[in-house]
Image (cartoon, rainbow, N blue to C red):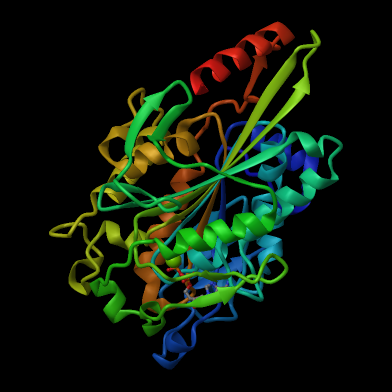
Length: 410
Ligand code: ADP
Ligand code: MG
Protein backbone atom coordinates (compact mmCIF):
# COMPACT_ATOMS: atom_id res chain seq x y z
CA UNK A 1 0.00 0.00 0.00
CA UNK A 2 1.14 3.50 -0.79
CA UNK A 3 2.24 5.48 2.23
CA UNK A 4 1.74 9.19 2.04
CA UNK A 5 4.07 11.56 3.80
CA UNK A 6 1.76 13.86 5.65
CA UNK A 7 4.48 16.48 6.03
CA UNK A 8 4.28 17.22 2.36
CA UNK A 9 0.53 17.44 2.14
CA UNK A 10 -1.46 20.62 1.99
CA UNK A 11 -4.92 20.55 3.55
CA UNK A 12 -6.74 19.64 0.36
CA UNK A 13 -4.33 16.81 -0.34
CA UNK A 14 -4.67 15.57 3.21
CA UNK A 15 -8.42 15.43 2.72
CA UNK A 16 -8.22 13.43 -0.45
CA UNK A 17 -5.96 10.93 1.30
CA UNK A 18 -8.64 10.50 3.93
CA UNK A 19 -11.30 9.99 1.36
CA UNK A 20 -9.57 7.03 -0.19
CA UNK A 21 -10.83 4.98 2.73
CA UNK A 22 -7.79 3.93 4.69
CA UNK A 23 -7.23 4.37 8.40
CA UNK A 24 -4.46 6.89 8.88
CA UNK A 25 -1.99 5.62 11.45
CA UNK A 26 0.37 7.83 13.41
CA UNK A 27 2.88 7.05 16.13
CA UNK A 28 3.72 9.42 18.94
CA UNK A 29 6.79 8.89 21.08
CA UNK A 30 6.66 10.50 24.49
CA UNK A 31 9.67 11.96 26.30
CA UNK A 32 11.59 9.78 28.77
CA UNK A 33 10.02 10.01 32.20
CA UNK A 34 12.12 10.90 35.22
CA UNK A 35 11.25 7.55 36.76
CA UNK A 36 12.47 5.66 33.71
CA UNK A 37 15.74 7.58 33.68
CA UNK A 38 16.26 6.96 37.38
CA UNK A 39 15.62 3.28 36.86
CA UNK A 40 18.52 3.30 34.39
CA UNK A 41 16.45 2.46 31.36
CA UNK A 42 17.84 3.01 27.87
CA UNK A 43 16.08 4.53 24.92
CA UNK A 44 14.99 1.79 22.54
CA UNK A 45 13.08 3.81 19.96
CA UNK A 46 14.35 6.11 17.28
CA UNK A 47 12.24 8.16 14.90
CA UNK A 48 13.80 9.12 11.60
CA UNK A 49 12.47 11.42 8.85
CA UNK A 50 9.35 12.03 10.92
CA UNK A 51 8.03 8.75 9.62
CA UNK A 52 10.21 5.73 10.28
CA UNK A 53 10.32 4.06 13.67
CA UNK A 54 13.25 1.84 14.68
CA UNK A 55 12.98 -0.38 17.69
CA UNK A 56 15.85 -2.22 19.35
CA UNK A 57 16.72 -3.74 22.66
CA UNK A 58 20.37 -2.75 22.31
CA UNK A 59 19.98 0.89 21.49
CA UNK A 60 22.79 3.31 21.28
CA UNK A 61 20.86 6.51 21.54
CA UNK A 62 22.59 8.56 18.90
CA UNK A 63 23.22 6.03 16.23
CA UNK A 64 20.14 5.11 14.33
CA UNK A 65 22.06 3.50 11.49
CA UNK A 66 23.41 1.05 13.99
CA UNK A 67 19.89 0.54 15.24
CA UNK A 68 18.76 -0.25 11.76
CA UNK A 69 21.44 -2.90 11.37
CA UNK A 70 20.94 -4.35 14.81
CA UNK A 71 17.27 -4.68 15.15
CA UNK A 72 15.71 -5.09 11.78
CA UNK A 73 12.49 -3.92 13.39
CA UNK A 74 11.48 -1.02 11.30
CA UNK A 75 8.02 0.44 10.83
CA UNK A 76 6.70 3.23 8.64
CA UNK A 77 3.56 5.23 9.36
CA UNK A 78 1.70 8.17 7.88
CA UNK A 79 3.76 10.24 10.26
CA UNK A 80 5.71 9.45 13.40
CA UNK A 81 6.07 12.15 15.99
CA UNK A 82 9.34 12.42 17.94
CA UNK A 83 9.18 13.36 21.62
CA UNK A 84 9.65 17.06 20.82
CA UNK A 85 6.40 17.28 18.84
CA UNK A 86 3.92 19.85 20.15
CA UNK A 87 0.26 19.13 20.85
CA UNK A 88 -0.70 21.63 18.15
CA UNK A 89 1.43 19.82 15.60
CA UNK A 90 -0.10 16.47 16.51
CA UNK A 91 -3.55 18.00 16.20
CA UNK A 92 -2.91 19.69 12.83
CA UNK A 93 -1.41 16.61 11.24
CA UNK A 94 -3.83 14.02 12.59
CA UNK A 95 -7.20 15.57 13.31
CA UNK A 96 -7.64 19.03 11.71
CA UNK A 97 -8.66 17.42 8.41
CA UNK A 98 -11.31 15.33 10.19
CA UNK A 99 -12.83 18.42 11.77
CA UNK A 100 -13.22 19.97 8.33
CA UNK A 101 -14.84 16.80 7.00
CA UNK A 102 -17.25 16.69 9.97
CA UNK A 103 -18.33 20.24 9.15
CA UNK A 104 -19.21 19.01 5.68
CA UNK A 105 -21.43 16.28 7.08
CA UNK A 106 -19.03 13.34 7.17
CA UNK A 107 -18.03 11.06 10.04
CA UNK A 108 -14.63 11.14 11.64
CA UNK A 109 -13.03 9.36 14.54
CA UNK A 110 -9.76 9.55 16.36
CA UNK A 111 -8.54 6.98 18.83
CA UNK A 112 -5.38 6.53 20.83
CA UNK A 113 -3.91 3.09 21.28
CA UNK A 114 -1.04 2.07 23.54
CA UNK A 115 0.02 0.79 26.94
CA UNK A 116 -0.80 2.55 30.20
CA UNK A 117 1.58 5.47 30.66
CA UNK A 118 2.42 5.71 26.95
CA UNK A 119 0.72 9.11 26.58
CA UNK A 120 -2.85 8.43 25.37
CA UNK A 121 -4.61 10.75 27.79
CA UNK A 122 -1.91 13.38 27.33
CA UNK A 123 -2.53 13.20 23.60
CA UNK A 124 -6.32 13.23 23.82
CA UNK A 125 -6.95 15.54 26.76
CA UNK A 126 -3.58 17.12 27.55
CA UNK A 127 -2.83 19.52 30.38
CA UNK A 128 -3.55 23.14 31.27
CA UNK A 129 -0.61 24.48 29.34
CA UNK A 130 -0.73 21.91 26.60
CA UNK A 131 -4.31 21.00 25.75
CA UNK A 132 -4.65 17.85 23.64
CA UNK A 133 -6.44 16.74 20.50
CA UNK A 134 -9.93 16.64 22.03
CA UNK A 135 -9.69 20.20 23.31
CA UNK A 136 -7.99 21.58 20.19
CA UNK A 137 -10.56 19.86 17.94
CA UNK A 138 -13.49 21.35 19.83
CA UNK A 139 -11.92 24.80 19.82
CA UNK A 140 -11.22 24.50 16.09
CA UNK A 141 -14.72 23.20 15.37
CA UNK A 142 -16.40 26.17 16.98
CA UNK A 143 -14.01 28.69 15.47
CA UNK A 144 -14.68 27.23 12.00
CA UNK A 145 -18.43 27.35 12.58
CA UNK A 146 -18.18 30.98 13.67
CA UNK A 147 -16.11 31.86 10.62
CA UNK A 148 -18.42 30.12 8.20
CA UNK A 149 -21.20 31.92 6.41
CA UNK A 150 -23.86 29.56 7.74
CA UNK A 151 -22.98 30.06 11.38
CA UNK A 152 -26.61 30.30 12.59
CA UNK A 153 -27.40 27.07 10.91
CA UNK A 154 -25.10 24.73 12.83
CA UNK A 155 -26.00 23.00 16.03
CA UNK A 156 -23.50 20.97 18.03
CA UNK A 157 -24.53 18.09 20.27
CA UNK A 158 -22.32 16.21 22.64
CA UNK A 159 -22.44 12.76 24.21
CA UNK A 160 -19.90 11.09 26.45
CA UNK A 161 -19.86 7.40 27.39
CA UNK A 162 -17.57 4.79 28.82
CA UNK A 163 -17.30 1.02 28.59
CA UNK A 164 -16.22 -0.69 31.72
CA UNK A 165 -16.52 -4.41 32.44
CA UNK A 166 -18.76 -4.90 29.42
CA UNK A 167 -21.06 -2.20 30.72
CA UNK A 168 -21.79 0.95 28.74
CA UNK A 169 -22.42 4.03 30.88
CA UNK A 170 -23.60 7.48 29.99
CA UNK A 171 -21.15 9.86 31.62
CA UNK A 172 -23.34 12.91 31.17
CA UNK A 173 -26.38 11.43 32.85
CA UNK A 174 -25.26 8.46 34.91
CA UNK A 175 -27.90 5.91 35.66
CA UNK A 176 -28.73 2.48 34.40
CA UNK A 177 -26.27 0.90 31.94
CA UNK A 178 -27.07 1.55 28.29
CA UNK A 179 -28.11 -1.15 25.86
CA UNK A 180 -26.46 -1.23 22.43
CA UNK A 181 -28.77 -1.51 19.47
CA UNK A 182 -28.25 -1.71 15.78
CA UNK A 183 -30.30 0.66 13.68
CA UNK A 184 -29.90 2.11 10.21
CA UNK A 185 -27.26 4.54 11.44
CA UNK A 186 -25.19 1.71 12.86
CA UNK A 187 -24.69 0.67 16.47
CA UNK A 188 -26.24 3.13 18.88
CA UNK A 189 -26.34 3.26 22.66
CA UNK A 190 -30.07 3.45 23.32
CA UNK A 191 -31.00 6.37 25.53
CA UNK A 192 -27.59 8.05 25.44
CA UNK A 193 -28.11 11.74 26.16
CA UNK A 194 -26.98 14.28 23.63
CA UNK A 195 -26.46 17.72 25.05
CA UNK A 196 -26.63 20.74 22.85
CA UNK A 197 -23.58 22.96 23.27
CA UNK A 198 -23.35 26.47 21.91
CA UNK A 199 -19.69 27.18 22.55
CA UNK A 200 -16.40 25.49 23.27
CA UNK A 201 -16.86 26.62 26.90
CA UNK A 202 -20.05 24.65 27.17
CA UNK A 203 -18.43 21.55 25.70
CA UNK A 204 -15.60 21.85 28.18
CA UNK A 205 -18.04 22.17 31.06
CA UNK A 206 -19.85 19.03 29.91
CA UNK A 207 -16.57 17.16 29.50
CA UNK A 208 -15.54 18.10 32.98
CA UNK A 209 -18.85 16.93 34.36
CA UNK A 210 -18.42 13.63 32.50
CA UNK A 211 -14.86 13.10 33.71
CA UNK A 212 -16.09 13.20 37.30
CA UNK A 213 -18.33 10.26 36.49
CA UNK A 214 -15.62 8.06 35.00
CA UNK A 215 -14.96 4.72 36.64
CA UNK A 216 -11.98 4.26 38.89
CA UNK A 217 -10.44 0.89 39.49
CA UNK A 218 -7.15 0.05 41.17
CA UNK A 219 -5.23 -2.62 39.30
CA UNK A 220 -1.92 -4.35 39.67
CA UNK A 221 -0.59 -2.34 36.77
CA UNK A 222 -1.50 0.73 38.69
CA UNK A 223 0.30 -0.34 41.83
CA UNK A 224 3.50 -1.17 40.02
CA UNK A 225 3.54 1.77 37.65
CA UNK A 226 3.89 5.45 38.25
CA UNK A 227 2.47 6.75 41.52
CA UNK A 228 0.90 9.70 39.80
CA UNK A 229 -1.69 7.32 38.45
CA UNK A 230 -3.13 7.00 41.92
CA UNK A 231 -3.43 10.73 42.34
CA UNK A 232 -6.35 12.73 41.10
CA UNK A 233 -4.88 15.06 38.55
CA UNK A 234 -6.80 18.24 38.09
CA UNK A 235 -5.99 20.66 35.33
CA UNK A 236 -7.63 23.81 34.07
CA UNK A 237 -8.12 24.44 30.42
CA UNK A 238 -7.46 28.13 29.88
CA UNK A 239 -9.28 30.23 27.30
CA UNK A 240 -12.33 28.10 27.58
CA UNK A 241 -13.75 28.48 31.00
CA UNK A 242 -12.66 28.38 34.57
CA UNK A 243 -14.01 24.92 35.00
CA UNK A 244 -11.65 22.21 36.06
CA UNK A 245 -11.02 19.20 33.94
CA UNK A 246 -9.62 16.17 35.61
CA UNK A 247 -7.42 14.31 33.22
CA UNK A 248 -6.91 11.26 35.38
CA UNK A 249 -9.89 11.13 37.64
CA UNK A 250 -10.56 7.59 36.52
CA UNK A 251 -8.65 4.37 36.15
CA UNK A 252 -8.96 2.03 33.25
CA UNK A 253 -12.42 2.07 31.89
CA UNK A 254 -12.03 0.30 28.60
CA UNK A 255 -13.09 3.14 26.47
CA UNK A 256 -14.26 6.68 26.85
CA UNK A 257 -15.88 8.13 23.84
CA UNK A 258 -16.82 11.73 23.27
CA UNK A 259 -19.02 12.22 20.29
CA UNK A 260 -19.66 15.60 18.79
CA UNK A 261 -22.53 15.76 16.31
CA UNK A 262 -22.80 18.74 14.01
CA UNK A 263 -26.12 19.31 12.26
CA UNK A 264 -26.86 21.94 9.67
CA UNK A 265 -29.04 22.66 6.70
CA UNK A 266 -28.24 23.55 3.13
CA UNK A 267 -30.36 24.22 0.08
CA UNK A 268 -30.35 21.19 -2.19
CA UNK A 269 -30.29 21.27 -5.98
CA UNK A 270 -34.07 21.11 -6.22
CA UNK A 271 -34.48 23.94 -3.74
CA UNK A 272 -35.40 21.57 -0.93
CA UNK A 273 -33.82 21.93 2.45
CA UNK A 274 -31.18 19.26 3.06
CA UNK A 275 -30.12 18.27 6.57
CA UNK A 276 -26.50 17.34 7.03
CA UNK A 277 -25.04 15.57 10.02
CA UNK A 278 -21.34 15.13 10.75
CA UNK A 279 -20.13 13.08 13.71
CA UNK A 280 -16.74 13.36 15.34
CA UNK A 281 -15.81 10.63 17.82
CA UNK A 282 -12.86 11.11 20.12
CA UNK A 283 -11.87 7.92 21.88
CA UNK A 284 -9.51 7.32 24.79
CA UNK A 285 -8.93 3.56 25.06
CA UNK A 286 -7.75 1.67 28.11
CA UNK A 287 -4.12 0.57 28.19
CA UNK A 288 -3.53 -2.10 25.57
CA UNK A 289 -1.40 -4.13 27.97
CA UNK A 290 -4.64 -5.18 29.61
CA UNK A 291 -5.08 -7.58 26.73
CA UNK A 292 -2.46 -9.69 28.46
CA UNK A 293 -1.58 -10.10 32.11
CA UNK A 294 0.32 -7.28 33.74
CA UNK A 295 2.41 -9.88 35.51
CA UNK A 296 6.04 -9.83 34.24
CA UNK A 297 6.18 -13.59 33.93
CA UNK A 298 3.41 -13.68 31.39
CA UNK A 299 3.96 -10.31 29.82
CA UNK A 300 5.63 -11.70 26.75
CA UNK A 301 3.40 -14.65 26.16
CA UNK A 302 -0.30 -14.84 25.79
CA UNK A 303 -0.33 -18.25 27.46
CA UNK A 304 -1.89 -18.38 30.87
CA UNK A 305 -2.60 -14.72 30.64
CA UNK A 306 -5.55 -12.98 32.05
CA UNK A 307 -7.05 -12.07 28.75
CA UNK A 308 -9.18 -9.06 28.46
CA UNK A 309 -12.05 -10.06 26.27
CA UNK A 310 -12.69 -6.69 24.74
CA UNK A 311 -9.16 -5.88 23.72
CA UNK A 312 -8.77 -9.38 22.38
CA UNK A 313 -11.97 -8.86 20.44
CA UNK A 314 -10.47 -5.65 19.07
CA UNK A 315 -7.43 -7.57 17.82
CA UNK A 316 -9.70 -10.17 16.20
CA UNK A 317 -11.64 -7.45 14.42
CA UNK A 318 -8.48 -5.76 13.21
CA UNK A 319 -7.22 -9.11 11.93
CA UNK A 320 -10.49 -9.91 10.17
CA UNK A 321 -10.60 -6.45 8.59
CA UNK A 322 -6.99 -6.67 7.44
CA UNK A 323 -7.58 -10.11 5.95
CA UNK A 324 -10.66 -8.81 4.15
CA UNK A 325 -12.98 -11.33 5.85
CA UNK A 326 -16.71 -11.07 5.19
CA UNK A 327 -17.65 -11.57 8.82
CA UNK A 328 -16.07 -9.15 11.27
CA UNK A 329 -16.71 -10.26 14.88
CA UNK A 330 -17.81 -6.89 16.25
CA UNK A 331 -20.49 -8.55 18.35
CA UNK A 332 -17.92 -10.21 20.62
CA UNK A 333 -17.63 -7.18 22.87
CA UNK A 334 -19.14 -3.82 23.66
CA UNK A 335 -15.87 -2.12 22.78
CA UNK A 336 -15.80 -3.49 19.23
CA UNK A 337 -19.49 -2.75 18.73
CA UNK A 338 -18.87 0.87 19.65
CA UNK A 339 -15.80 1.03 17.44
CA UNK A 340 -17.59 -0.58 14.49
CA UNK A 341 -18.27 2.75 12.79
CA UNK A 342 -14.69 3.89 13.23
CA UNK A 343 -13.11 0.68 12.00
CA UNK A 344 -15.28 -0.65 9.25
CA UNK A 345 -17.86 2.04 8.67
CA UNK A 346 -18.16 5.05 6.45
CA UNK A 347 -15.80 7.13 8.50
CA UNK A 348 -12.49 8.94 8.24
CA UNK A 349 -10.46 7.29 10.97
CA UNK A 350 -7.22 8.29 12.60
CA UNK A 351 -5.31 6.03 14.99
CA UNK A 352 -2.59 7.48 17.15
CA UNK A 353 -0.34 4.83 18.64
CA UNK A 354 1.41 6.07 21.76
CA UNK A 355 4.74 4.63 22.81
CA UNK A 356 7.33 5.14 25.52
CA UNK A 357 11.01 5.39 24.53
CA UNK A 358 12.16 3.31 27.50
CA UNK A 359 13.69 -0.13 27.23
CA UNK A 360 11.57 -1.01 30.29
CA UNK A 361 8.54 -0.85 28.00
CA UNK A 362 10.13 -2.71 25.10
CA UNK A 363 7.52 -5.49 24.98
CA UNK A 364 4.58 -3.12 25.13
CA UNK A 365 6.08 -0.84 22.50
CA UNK A 366 6.69 -3.76 20.19
CA UNK A 367 3.09 -4.88 20.67
CA UNK A 368 1.70 -1.40 20.01
CA UNK A 369 3.81 -0.97 16.86
CA UNK A 370 2.70 -4.39 15.65
CA UNK A 371 -0.99 -3.50 15.91
CA UNK A 372 -0.48 -0.03 14.49
CA UNK A 373 1.28 -1.62 11.53
CA UNK A 374 -1.66 -4.01 11.01
CA UNK A 375 -4.17 -1.16 11.30
CA UNK A 376 -2.60 0.56 8.27
CA UNK A 377 -4.15 -2.14 6.11
CA UNK A 378 -7.72 -1.54 7.27
CA UNK A 379 -9.93 -0.06 4.58
CA UNK A 380 -13.01 1.85 5.63
CA UNK A 381 -16.02 2.40 3.42
CA UNK A 382 -16.29 5.49 1.25
CA UNK A 383 -17.19 8.32 3.55
CA UNK A 384 -20.13 10.08 1.98
CA UNK A 385 -21.84 13.16 3.26
CA UNK A 386 -24.70 12.19 5.59
CA UNK A 387 -27.69 14.02 4.29
CA UNK A 388 -31.39 13.74 4.21
CA UNK A 389 -33.89 15.88 2.35
CA UNK A 390 -36.41 17.53 4.57
CA UNK A 391 -39.97 17.76 3.36
CA UNK A 392 -40.86 21.35 4.04
CA UNK A 393 -43.78 21.76 6.44
CA UNK A 394 -46.48 23.73 4.82
CA UNK A 395 -48.02 26.51 6.86
CA UNK A 396 -51.32 24.65 7.08
CA UNK A 397 -49.54 21.55 8.48
CA UNK A 398 -47.91 23.66 11.15
CA UNK A 399 -51.22 25.27 12.04
CA UNK A 400 -52.84 21.83 12.34
CA UNK A 401 -50.06 20.59 14.60
CA UNK A 402 -50.41 23.65 16.81
CA UNK A 403 -54.14 23.07 17.17
CA UNK A 404 -53.59 19.42 18.12
CA UNK A 405 -51.02 20.39 20.73
CA UNK A 406 -53.30 23.03 22.17
CA UNK A 407 -56.11 20.47 22.42
CA UNK A 408 -53.84 18.01 24.22
CA UNK A 409 -52.75 20.61 26.72
CA UNK A 410 -56.20 21.84 27.54
P1 ADP B 1 -1.84 6.93 29.28
O1 ADP B 1 -3.09 7.72 29.17
O2 ADP B 1 -1.45 6.30 27.98
O3 ADP B 1 -1.88 5.94 30.38
P2 ADP B 1 -0.66 9.44 30.08
O4 ADP B 1 -1.17 10.28 28.97
O5 ADP B 1 -1.36 9.53 31.37
O6 ADP B 1 -0.63 7.91 29.62
O7 ADP B 1 0.89 9.75 30.22
C1 ADP B 1 1.71 9.29 31.28
C2 ADP B 1 2.59 10.44 31.79
O8 ADP B 1 3.47 10.90 30.78
C3 ADP B 1 1.78 11.65 32.22
O9 ADP B 1 2.38 12.21 33.35
C4 ADP B 1 1.90 12.60 31.04
O10 ADP B 1 1.76 13.94 31.42
C5 ADP B 1 3.28 12.29 30.49
N1 ADP B 1 3.33 12.47 29.03
C6 ADP B 1 2.79 11.65 28.11
N2 ADP B 1 3.03 12.07 26.86
C7 ADP B 1 3.75 13.20 26.99
C8 ADP B 1 4.32 14.14 26.05
N3 ADP B 1 4.19 13.98 24.72
N4 ADP B 1 5.00 15.18 26.53
C9 ADP B 1 5.14 15.36 27.87
N5 ADP B 1 4.64 14.53 28.79
C10 ADP B 1 3.95 13.46 28.37
MG1 MG C 1 -4.93 7.39 30.11
